[in-house]
Image 1 (tube, rainbow, N blue to C red):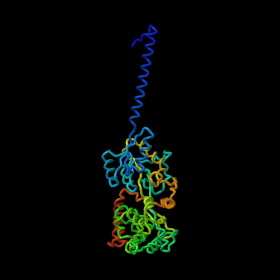
Image 2 (cartoon, rainbow, N blue to C red):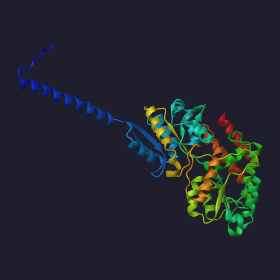
Image 3 (cartoon, rainbow, N blue to C red):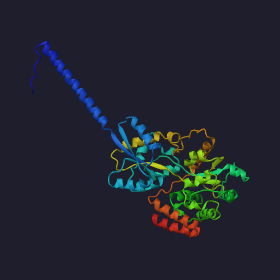
Length: 424
Protein backbone atom coordinates (compact mmCIF):
# COMPACT_ATOMS: atom_id res chain seq x y z
CA UNK A 1 0.00 0.00 0.00
CA UNK A 2 1.32 3.48 -0.91
CA UNK A 3 2.35 5.58 2.12
CA UNK A 4 0.75 9.05 2.05
CA UNK A 5 2.87 12.06 3.21
CA UNK A 6 1.24 14.66 5.42
CA UNK A 7 1.56 18.27 4.19
CA UNK A 8 4.46 20.11 5.94
CA UNK A 9 3.33 23.73 5.31
CA UNK A 10 0.06 25.65 5.00
CA UNK A 11 0.89 26.24 1.34
CA UNK A 12 1.23 22.53 0.77
CA UNK A 13 -2.00 21.96 2.74
CA UNK A 14 -3.79 24.50 0.56
CA UNK A 15 -2.46 22.90 -2.62
CA UNK A 16 -3.59 19.51 -1.38
CA UNK A 17 -7.13 20.81 -0.70
CA UNK A 18 -7.16 22.55 -4.11
CA UNK A 19 -6.04 19.33 -5.80
CA UNK A 20 -8.84 17.37 -4.08
CA UNK A 21 -11.42 19.98 -5.11
CA UNK A 22 -10.37 19.74 -8.73
CA UNK A 23 -10.59 15.95 -8.60
CA UNK A 24 -14.08 16.26 -7.11
CA UNK A 25 -15.19 18.61 -9.86
CA UNK A 26 -13.81 16.26 -12.48
CA UNK A 27 -15.64 13.34 -10.87
CA UNK A 28 -18.93 15.28 -10.89
CA UNK A 29 -18.36 16.27 -14.49
CA UNK A 30 -17.76 12.63 -15.35
CA UNK A 31 -21.03 11.66 -13.68
CA UNK A 32 -22.90 14.45 -15.51
CA UNK A 33 -21.42 13.42 -18.85
CA UNK A 34 -22.43 9.84 -18.17
CA UNK A 35 -25.97 10.96 -17.44
CA UNK A 36 -26.08 13.01 -20.62
CA UNK A 37 -24.74 10.07 -22.56
CA UNK A 38 -27.41 7.79 -21.10
CA UNK A 39 -30.08 10.38 -21.94
CA UNK A 40 -28.75 10.62 -25.48
CA UNK A 41 -29.27 6.88 -25.78
CA UNK A 42 -33.05 6.92 -25.34
CA UNK A 43 -34.89 3.75 -26.29
CA UNK A 44 -36.02 4.09 -29.90
CA UNK A 45 -39.48 2.78 -30.84
CA UNK A 46 -40.44 2.58 -34.51
CA UNK A 47 -44.04 3.01 -35.67
CA UNK A 48 -45.57 2.18 -39.07
CA UNK A 49 -48.94 3.51 -40.14
CA UNK A 50 -50.86 4.83 -43.14
CA UNK A 51 -51.47 8.17 -41.46
CA UNK A 52 -50.52 11.33 -43.32
CA UNK A 53 -49.39 14.55 -41.66
CA UNK A 54 -52.98 15.65 -40.94
CA UNK A 55 -53.88 12.34 -39.29
CA UNK A 56 -53.26 10.96 -35.78
CA UNK A 57 -50.04 8.94 -35.85
CA UNK A 58 -47.40 11.54 -36.87
CA UNK A 59 -49.00 14.23 -34.73
CA UNK A 60 -49.32 12.08 -31.61
CA UNK A 61 -45.75 10.91 -32.09
CA UNK A 62 -44.45 14.49 -32.32
CA UNK A 63 -46.31 15.36 -29.14
CA UNK A 64 -44.98 12.28 -27.34
CA UNK A 65 -41.38 13.02 -28.32
CA UNK A 66 -41.70 16.52 -26.82
CA UNK A 67 -42.43 14.95 -23.43
CA UNK A 68 -38.84 13.67 -23.24
CA UNK A 69 -39.70 10.42 -21.44
CA UNK A 70 -36.52 8.56 -22.35
CA UNK A 71 -38.25 7.02 -25.37
CA UNK A 72 -37.78 8.35 -28.88
CA UNK A 73 -40.42 7.37 -31.43
CA UNK A 74 -39.58 7.23 -35.13
CA UNK A 75 -42.38 7.20 -37.71
CA UNK A 76 -42.72 5.70 -41.16
CA UNK A 77 -45.76 6.14 -43.39
CA UNK A 78 -46.63 3.06 -45.46
CA UNK A 79 -49.15 2.48 -48.25
CA UNK A 80 -52.46 0.63 -47.82
CA UNK A 81 -51.75 -2.04 -50.43
CA UNK A 82 -48.36 -2.80 -48.87
CA UNK A 83 -49.33 -3.15 -45.21
CA UNK A 84 -49.78 -6.92 -44.99
CA UNK A 85 -47.06 -8.02 -47.42
CA UNK A 86 -44.44 -5.56 -46.21
CA UNK A 87 -45.20 -6.08 -42.52
CA UNK A 88 -45.07 -9.87 -42.79
CA UNK A 89 -41.86 -9.71 -44.81
CA UNK A 90 -40.30 -7.39 -42.24
CA UNK A 91 -41.38 -9.69 -39.40
CA UNK A 92 -40.02 -12.83 -41.08
CA UNK A 93 -36.65 -11.16 -41.73
CA UNK A 94 -36.31 -9.66 -38.24
CA UNK A 95 -36.84 -6.08 -39.44
CA UNK A 96 -40.36 -5.44 -38.18
CA UNK A 97 -41.15 -2.14 -36.46
CA UNK A 98 -42.06 -2.13 -32.80
CA UNK A 99 -45.60 -0.84 -33.44
CA UNK A 100 -47.89 -0.98 -36.46
CA UNK A 101 -51.43 0.10 -37.34
CA UNK A 102 -53.31 -2.53 -39.37
CA UNK A 103 -56.78 -2.64 -40.89
CA UNK A 104 -59.03 -4.40 -38.39
CA UNK A 105 -59.89 -7.45 -40.58
CA UNK A 106 -56.17 -8.13 -41.04
CA UNK A 107 -55.44 -8.22 -37.31
CA UNK A 108 -56.25 -11.91 -36.80
CA UNK A 109 -53.78 -12.95 -39.52
CA UNK A 110 -50.87 -11.53 -37.53
CA UNK A 111 -52.19 -12.56 -34.11
CA UNK A 112 -52.74 -16.19 -35.14
CA UNK A 113 -49.19 -16.48 -36.46
CA UNK A 114 -47.57 -15.15 -33.32
CA UNK A 115 -46.46 -11.98 -35.06
CA UNK A 116 -48.24 -9.70 -32.59
CA UNK A 117 -47.45 -9.47 -28.90
CA UNK A 118 -50.08 -10.69 -26.44
CA UNK A 119 -50.98 -7.51 -24.55
CA UNK A 120 -53.48 -9.11 -22.16
CA UNK A 121 -51.32 -8.83 -19.04
CA UNK A 122 -49.99 -5.37 -19.87
CA UNK A 123 -53.54 -4.12 -20.43
CA UNK A 124 -54.72 -5.71 -17.18
CA UNK A 125 -52.08 -3.71 -15.28
CA UNK A 126 -52.72 -0.47 -17.17
CA UNK A 127 -54.57 2.45 -15.59
CA UNK A 128 -55.10 3.96 -19.07
CA UNK A 129 -56.20 1.14 -21.38
CA UNK A 130 -59.55 -0.25 -20.18
CA UNK A 131 -61.19 -2.93 -22.38
CA UNK A 132 -64.64 -2.12 -20.99
CA UNK A 133 -64.40 1.38 -22.49
CA UNK A 134 -64.41 0.09 -26.08
CA UNK A 135 -67.31 -0.63 -28.39
CA UNK A 136 -67.78 -4.44 -28.68
CA UNK A 137 -66.89 -4.58 -32.39
CA UNK A 138 -63.48 -2.87 -32.23
CA UNK A 139 -62.54 -4.85 -29.11
CA UNK A 140 -63.49 -8.14 -30.80
CA UNK A 141 -61.25 -7.28 -33.75
CA UNK A 142 -58.11 -7.24 -31.54
CA UNK A 143 -59.10 -10.42 -29.69
CA UNK A 144 -57.78 -13.84 -30.71
CA UNK A 145 -58.47 -17.02 -28.74
CA UNK A 146 -59.49 -14.98 -25.72
CA UNK A 147 -56.34 -12.83 -25.63
CA UNK A 148 -55.86 -9.18 -26.56
CA UNK A 149 -53.30 -8.66 -29.31
CA UNK A 150 -53.83 -4.97 -29.91
CA UNK A 151 -55.70 -1.79 -29.06
CA UNK A 152 -58.34 -0.24 -31.35
CA UNK A 153 -57.00 2.96 -32.89
CA UNK A 154 -60.24 4.44 -34.26
CA UNK A 155 -63.45 3.14 -35.79
CA UNK A 156 -66.24 3.85 -38.25
CA UNK A 157 -69.42 2.28 -39.54
CA UNK A 158 -72.16 2.83 -42.13
CA UNK A 159 -75.72 4.13 -41.98
CA UNK A 160 -78.35 5.48 -44.38
CA UNK A 161 -78.04 9.06 -45.64
CA UNK A 162 -81.20 10.51 -47.17
CA UNK A 163 -82.19 13.70 -49.00
CA UNK A 164 -84.96 15.37 -46.99
CA UNK A 165 -85.82 17.78 -49.80
CA UNK A 166 -86.46 14.89 -52.19
CA UNK A 167 -88.58 13.14 -49.55
CA UNK A 168 -90.75 16.26 -49.25
CA UNK A 169 -91.04 16.65 -53.02
CA UNK A 170 -92.36 13.08 -53.31
CA UNK A 171 -94.78 13.43 -50.42
CA UNK A 172 -92.68 11.33 -48.03
CA UNK A 173 -92.19 12.38 -44.42
CA UNK A 174 -88.58 13.60 -44.09
CA UNK A 175 -88.70 12.87 -40.38
CA UNK A 176 -89.65 9.23 -40.96
CA UNK A 177 -86.90 7.67 -43.07
CA UNK A 178 -87.04 3.92 -43.93
CA UNK A 179 -86.68 1.63 -40.93
CA UNK A 180 -87.18 -1.77 -42.62
CA UNK A 181 -86.09 -3.38 -45.87
CA UNK A 182 -89.62 -3.13 -47.26
CA UNK A 183 -89.78 0.56 -46.40
CA UNK A 184 -86.40 1.09 -48.03
CA UNK A 185 -87.57 -0.58 -51.23
CA UNK A 186 -90.82 1.39 -51.27
CA UNK A 187 -88.97 4.68 -50.74
CA UNK A 188 -86.36 3.83 -53.40
CA UNK A 189 -89.11 3.12 -55.94
CA UNK A 190 -90.94 6.34 -55.06
CA UNK A 191 -87.80 8.45 -55.20
CA UNK A 192 -86.28 7.04 -58.39
CA UNK A 193 -86.85 9.51 -61.23
CA UNK A 194 -85.14 8.54 -64.51
CA UNK A 195 -86.28 11.77 -66.21
CA UNK A 196 -84.38 13.78 -63.62
CA UNK A 197 -81.46 11.32 -63.57
CA UNK A 198 -82.17 10.47 -59.93
CA UNK A 199 -81.74 7.00 -58.44
CA UNK A 200 -83.49 5.99 -55.27
CA UNK A 201 -80.37 4.57 -53.63
CA UNK A 202 -76.59 4.68 -53.93
CA UNK A 203 -74.38 1.96 -52.48
CA UNK A 204 -71.29 -0.05 -53.38
CA UNK A 205 -71.37 -3.66 -54.54
CA UNK A 206 -67.84 -3.49 -55.92
CA UNK A 207 -65.82 -6.70 -56.20
CA UNK A 208 -63.43 -5.80 -53.41
CA UNK A 209 -63.53 -5.36 -49.64
CA UNK A 210 -65.95 -2.44 -49.97
CA UNK A 211 -68.60 -4.76 -51.41
CA UNK A 212 -68.20 -7.18 -48.50
CA UNK A 213 -68.17 -4.26 -46.07
CA UNK A 214 -71.56 -3.10 -47.35
CA UNK A 215 -73.24 -6.50 -47.76
CA UNK A 216 -72.17 -8.28 -44.58
CA UNK A 217 -74.49 -6.25 -42.28
CA UNK A 218 -77.44 -7.31 -44.44
CA UNK A 219 -76.36 -10.94 -44.09
CA UNK A 220 -75.93 -10.60 -40.31
CA UNK A 221 -79.28 -8.87 -39.81
CA UNK A 222 -80.87 -11.70 -41.80
CA UNK A 223 -79.53 -14.34 -39.42
CA UNK A 224 -76.39 -15.28 -41.33
CA UNK A 225 -72.76 -14.27 -41.39
CA UNK A 226 -69.51 -15.15 -43.08
CA UNK A 227 -69.70 -18.66 -41.59
CA UNK A 228 -73.36 -19.06 -42.60
CA UNK A 229 -73.41 -17.03 -45.80
CA UNK A 230 -76.09 -19.10 -47.56
CA UNK A 231 -78.71 -18.87 -44.79
CA UNK A 232 -82.26 -18.33 -46.04
CA UNK A 233 -82.32 -14.71 -44.86
CA UNK A 234 -79.03 -13.94 -46.60
CA UNK A 235 -80.46 -15.26 -49.88
CA UNK A 236 -83.38 -12.87 -49.42
CA UNK A 237 -80.95 -9.99 -48.77
CA UNK A 238 -79.01 -10.68 -51.96
CA UNK A 239 -82.29 -11.00 -53.86
CA UNK A 240 -83.16 -7.50 -52.65
CA UNK A 241 -79.85 -6.17 -53.93
CA UNK A 242 -80.58 -7.88 -57.24
CA UNK A 243 -84.01 -6.24 -57.41
CA UNK A 244 -82.48 -2.84 -56.70
CA UNK A 245 -80.10 -3.27 -59.63
CA UNK A 246 -82.65 -4.87 -62.00
CA UNK A 247 -85.25 -2.16 -61.39
CA UNK A 248 -82.57 0.52 -61.76
CA UNK A 249 -83.32 1.85 -58.29
CA UNK A 250 -79.55 2.25 -58.07
CA UNK A 251 -77.04 2.99 -60.78
CA UNK A 252 -75.79 -0.07 -62.73
CA UNK A 253 -72.23 1.01 -61.98
CA UNK A 254 -72.86 0.26 -58.30
CA UNK A 255 -71.09 -3.01 -59.18
CA UNK A 256 -67.88 -1.19 -60.07
CA UNK A 257 -67.88 1.97 -57.97
CA UNK A 258 -66.58 2.29 -54.45
CA UNK A 259 -68.26 4.02 -51.52
CA UNK A 260 -66.60 7.36 -52.20
CA UNK A 261 -67.95 7.57 -55.74
CA UNK A 262 -71.40 6.23 -54.86
CA UNK A 263 -71.74 8.82 -52.10
CA UNK A 264 -70.68 11.46 -54.61
CA UNK A 265 -73.80 10.53 -56.59
CA UNK A 266 -75.87 11.38 -53.52
CA UNK A 267 -73.99 14.64 -52.88
CA UNK A 268 -74.60 15.78 -56.45
CA UNK A 269 -78.35 15.21 -56.13
CA UNK A 270 -78.43 12.15 -58.39
CA UNK A 271 -79.45 9.72 -55.64
CA UNK A 272 -82.07 10.20 -52.95
CA UNK A 273 -80.44 7.88 -50.40
CA UNK A 274 -76.94 6.49 -49.88
CA UNK A 275 -75.35 3.89 -47.63
CA UNK A 276 -72.05 5.28 -46.43
CA UNK A 277 -70.02 6.28 -43.40
CA UNK A 278 -69.01 9.22 -41.19
CA UNK A 279 -65.86 9.80 -43.22
CA UNK A 280 -68.18 11.56 -45.71
CA UNK A 281 -69.52 14.17 -43.29
CA UNK A 282 -67.07 16.99 -43.99
CA UNK A 283 -67.31 16.42 -47.73
CA UNK A 284 -71.10 16.36 -47.53
CA UNK A 285 -71.17 19.61 -45.59
CA UNK A 286 -69.22 21.20 -48.43
CA UNK A 287 -70.85 19.57 -51.46
CA UNK A 288 -74.51 18.83 -50.64
CA UNK A 289 -76.79 21.73 -51.57
CA UNK A 290 -79.88 20.29 -49.88
CA UNK A 291 -81.26 19.31 -46.50
CA UNK A 292 -80.17 15.81 -45.51
CA UNK A 293 -80.27 13.43 -42.58
CA UNK A 294 -78.90 10.09 -41.41
CA UNK A 295 -80.75 7.11 -39.97
CA UNK A 296 -79.74 3.64 -38.78
CA UNK A 297 -79.43 0.91 -41.39
CA UNK A 298 -82.90 -0.54 -42.08
CA UNK A 299 -83.58 -3.98 -40.59
CA UNK A 300 -85.41 -6.93 -42.22
CA UNK A 301 -88.42 -6.25 -40.00
CA UNK A 302 -89.21 -4.26 -36.88
CA UNK A 303 -87.59 -5.88 -33.87
CA UNK A 304 -84.94 -7.72 -35.90
CA UNK A 305 -81.36 -7.77 -34.65
CA UNK A 306 -79.33 -4.83 -35.87
CA UNK A 307 -75.89 -4.95 -37.38
CA UNK A 308 -73.48 -2.70 -39.19
CA UNK A 309 -70.07 -2.79 -40.78
CA UNK A 310 -66.98 -1.76 -38.85
CA UNK A 311 -63.95 -0.08 -40.31
CA UNK A 312 -60.65 1.59 -39.39
CA UNK A 313 -57.40 0.43 -37.85
CA UNK A 314 -55.91 -1.14 -34.73
CA UNK A 315 -52.59 -0.63 -32.98
CA UNK A 316 -50.40 -3.66 -32.34
CA UNK A 317 -46.90 -4.38 -31.04
CA UNK A 318 -44.82 -6.93 -32.94
CA UNK A 319 -43.75 -9.88 -30.81
CA UNK A 320 -40.20 -9.39 -32.07
CA UNK A 321 -39.82 -6.03 -30.32
CA UNK A 322 -36.85 -5.70 -27.99
CA UNK A 323 -38.68 -3.08 -25.94
CA UNK A 324 -42.20 -4.33 -25.14
CA UNK A 325 -42.62 -2.19 -22.02
CA UNK A 326 -41.56 1.00 -23.77
CA UNK A 327 -43.67 0.21 -26.84
CA UNK A 328 -46.70 -0.28 -24.61
CA UNK A 329 -46.03 3.07 -22.92
CA UNK A 330 -46.22 4.66 -26.37
CA UNK A 331 -49.58 2.98 -26.99
CA UNK A 332 -50.80 4.12 -23.60
CA UNK A 333 -49.98 7.68 -24.61
CA UNK A 334 -51.92 7.27 -27.86
CA UNK A 335 -54.91 5.98 -25.89
CA UNK A 336 -54.64 8.88 -23.44
CA UNK A 337 -55.18 11.21 -26.41
CA UNK A 338 -58.36 9.53 -27.70
CA UNK A 339 -60.40 12.60 -26.75
CA UNK A 340 -58.60 14.39 -29.60
CA UNK A 341 -59.42 11.74 -32.19
CA UNK A 342 -62.51 13.47 -33.56
CA UNK A 343 -61.80 17.09 -32.58
CA UNK A 344 -58.31 17.20 -34.12
CA UNK A 345 -58.44 14.49 -36.77
CA UNK A 346 -62.10 13.93 -37.66
CA UNK A 347 -62.00 10.23 -36.72
CA UNK A 348 -64.38 8.46 -34.36
CA UNK A 349 -62.71 7.01 -31.26
CA UNK A 350 -63.31 3.30 -30.78
CA UNK A 351 -64.46 3.99 -27.23
CA UNK A 352 -68.00 4.35 -25.94
CA UNK A 353 -66.90 6.42 -22.92
CA UNK A 354 -65.80 9.43 -24.96
CA UNK A 355 -68.37 12.05 -25.90
CA UNK A 356 -68.02 13.69 -29.29
CA UNK A 357 -67.96 17.47 -28.77
CA UNK A 358 -70.57 19.49 -30.70
CA UNK A 359 -69.28 20.85 -33.99
CA UNK A 360 -71.75 23.73 -34.12
CA UNK A 361 -73.13 22.32 -37.40
CA UNK A 362 -76.66 20.97 -36.70
CA UNK A 363 -76.70 18.56 -39.67
CA UNK A 364 -73.31 17.15 -38.77
CA UNK A 365 -74.05 16.86 -35.05
CA UNK A 366 -77.33 15.04 -35.70
CA UNK A 367 -75.56 12.66 -38.08
CA UNK A 368 -72.80 11.92 -35.57
CA UNK A 369 -75.37 10.86 -32.98
CA UNK A 370 -76.74 8.29 -35.44
CA UNK A 371 -73.30 6.93 -36.29
CA UNK A 372 -72.41 6.59 -32.61
CA UNK A 373 -75.66 4.71 -32.06
CA UNK A 374 -74.93 2.51 -35.09
CA UNK A 375 -71.49 1.67 -33.66
CA UNK A 376 -73.19 -0.23 -30.84
CA UNK A 377 -74.19 -2.82 -33.44
CA UNK A 378 -71.06 -2.78 -35.62
CA UNK A 379 -69.32 -6.13 -35.98
CA UNK A 380 -65.80 -6.92 -37.18
CA UNK A 381 -65.17 -8.80 -40.40
CA UNK A 382 -64.13 -12.13 -38.93
CA UNK A 383 -61.96 -12.12 -36.96
CA UNK A 384 -60.25 -14.83 -38.99
CA UNK A 385 -56.66 -15.24 -40.24
CA UNK A 386 -57.88 -16.04 -43.75
CA UNK A 387 -60.30 -13.13 -44.03
CA UNK A 388 -59.20 -12.04 -47.55
CA UNK A 389 -60.15 -15.48 -48.92
CA UNK A 390 -63.47 -15.44 -47.07
CA UNK A 391 -64.21 -11.93 -48.32
CA UNK A 392 -63.32 -12.89 -51.90
CA UNK A 393 -65.88 -15.71 -51.81
CA UNK A 394 -68.57 -13.24 -50.68
CA UNK A 395 -67.56 -10.70 -53.33
CA UNK A 396 -67.74 -13.33 -56.06
CA UNK A 397 -71.24 -14.35 -54.94
CA UNK A 398 -72.46 -10.75 -54.99
CA UNK A 399 -71.10 -10.17 -58.47
CA UNK A 400 -72.43 -13.47 -59.84
CA UNK A 401 -75.94 -12.77 -58.54
CA UNK A 402 -76.15 -9.10 -59.50
CA UNK A 403 -74.87 -9.71 -63.03
CA UNK A 404 -77.31 -12.59 -63.56
CA UNK A 405 -74.65 -15.28 -63.92
CA UNK A 406 -76.23 -17.22 -61.06
CA UNK A 407 -79.28 -17.04 -58.84
CA UNK A 408 -78.70 -15.67 -55.34
CA UNK A 409 -79.01 -19.07 -53.68
CA UNK A 410 -76.66 -20.79 -56.11
CA UNK A 411 -74.09 -18.01 -55.77
CA UNK A 412 -74.24 -18.06 -51.98
CA UNK A 413 -74.13 -21.86 -51.84
CA UNK A 414 -70.94 -21.71 -53.87
CA UNK A 415 -69.52 -19.07 -51.53
CA UNK A 416 -70.44 -21.21 -48.52
CA UNK A 417 -68.49 -24.15 -49.97
CA UNK A 418 -65.43 -21.97 -50.57
CA UNK A 419 -65.61 -20.55 -47.06
CA UNK A 420 -66.07 -24.01 -45.57
CA UNK A 421 -62.83 -25.01 -47.27
CA UNK A 422 -61.09 -22.03 -45.69
CA UNK A 423 -62.50 -22.62 -42.23
CA UNK A 424 -61.63 -26.32 -42.38
